[in-house]
Image (cartoon, rainbow, N blue to C red; front, side):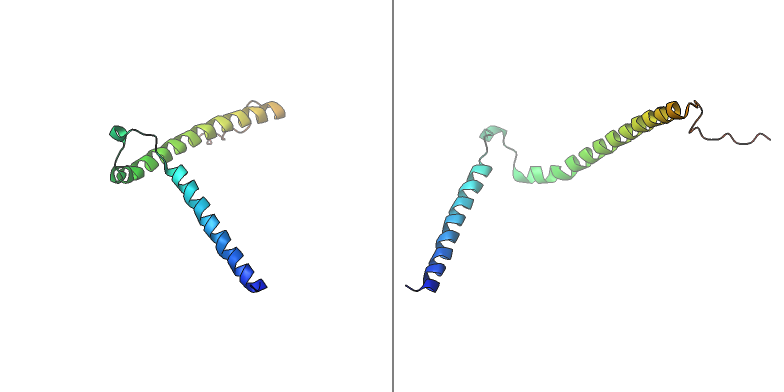
Length: 97
């Protein structure tokens, strides 16, 4: 067999071994330990996905807003201590009429 033929055989053999390994890994990754009685049909999972995503999005937004308020308060207090001015970063009062 020529060198080109051996290279072709190496590619074919490597592809076959790679496909076998990929199939084995996919099989192991998809094994489900959930008992049959507790399994939820795929269609129900698919229908519930947008609601779960929406809930997670709202929870993340609320957490982010809470952290933002807390961080702003901490940084404001730190700035006030650094400049030694307890009124620093307070919004100005509107002029009296």
